[in-house]
Each structure stands twice: as C-alpha cells, then as structure tokens.
Image 1 (cartoon, rainbow, N blue to C red):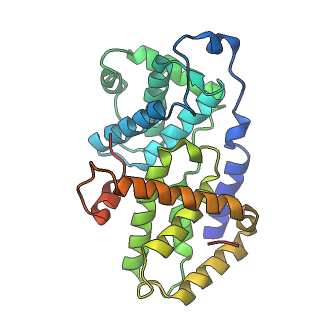
Image 2: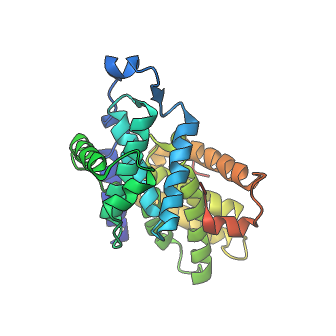
Length: 277
C-alpha cells in the first residue's frame, strides 16, 4: 500500500504538476514593467515571501507543510508569466496562494478579511478573491501537489523493522527540518519532490544518525529496498546527489548563521524563520 501511494504521487509530479509544463515566456507587457523582477533570479524577494509565509503559519498555529503547498502554487502560477512580475503582484500572489493552501490543507480556517489585514490594507478581500479565481483557472485547479514531506512520510515507513520507533521519529524530524529549508531555495523548484525527499533522508542517515541507532547493514538494506521497489530512482542518481549537495549547503548556512543562537537539535524543531549509484 505504501509503495502504491508513493508511485501515485510520483506519477502526479511527473505529469500534472511538472513545473516545466507551466512555464511560458514572459509577455511583452511584463517585460516593459519598470519594476518587473524575475522571481527565480531575485532571491531576496522569494526568500522574504517564504519566511513571511512561515511566520504567518506559525502565528496561526497551522501545519508547516501548508507553506510548501503555498510556495508550489506561487512558483507554478508565476511560471505561467515567465517568472516575471512586479512586487505588488508577487505579494498579492503569495497572499492568495497561502489562502488557497490553507483551505485545501487545514481543518482550521482563516477568514479572508484576516489575511487581507496582513497586507496592511494594501489588498482588500475582493482583491484576494479575484486573484484566487485567476490562479485556480491558470493552474487548471491543480492545487494538491505532492510535497517532499509527503514522500518522506512514506519513505521512512519503509525503513527496516529493526529501526526503533524513537530513531524513526528522529529521522523524520530532521528530514522535515531540512525540507522546510529547501522550500525557501528556488534551486529546488524544478527538482522532483521525490528526489528531494530521498536526498534528505540519505543525508540524515549519513550525517545525523549514528551506527548504534541504525546499523550499516540496515542502511544498505533500506537503500536496496528503495531502489529496487522504485526503479526510477536509479535513473535520477545525478539529480538526487545534486540535491544532497545543495541541502547540505543550506543546512550548513542555517546552522552557521550569526543570528542562530539555539542548538542544532532545537533549530531542527523550528526550521526557517521570517549516496546512490
């Protein structure tokens, strides 16, 4: 059953939700905007949006997985505009994709007027509703993307039975932290979430888990099981390893940040704020 769920998510990410399917060259109108930015190149803009989204989610005590959905919608929608927009459109889009993500991923609902107030009166509830319909139509109502954390939740269940419950929890907790970092990095926008998930788990097993917690034999058994069950991983060795390198860099930057005062294990609990072959 677990393997079937993973295969189904993989099928969705390779077809319906494939990022390149949404990309269209920027229009002449977008190119002429004096304040037009490329959200894939302007790292500051996208990073601020990601951190702001995490802060809103934390404020309302919602699931952080909702951020991954919101940013996925944000990236795919702006891809249909050649990744180009002005700052107002970027802000309105991020506010609206968060509103959509909350509706599809949370039991707790946030009123539209409440989200509108977060824009400091820059946008009205009507502005958000209008943008919501535009985003839904543009994305053909494809608003349930599989996330890296979705894959991780299932892949960890395939760890050998010899791995204890507490260790499984540690692997998941550390993997969750790292994938939350990856959401803020546009490098991963065009990478399959399944590859990011496997790269994350392999890094955690190699860098964070001792041989006393999971033996070498268990690790080898796990990798053989994963690559044997899902042969498509064998065709994405280079992509997975590139993700591993990038994830390590992100983690190092976060843990070496001068503003970070807590321990590594504590930081993993909070995440970002405002080998194969």
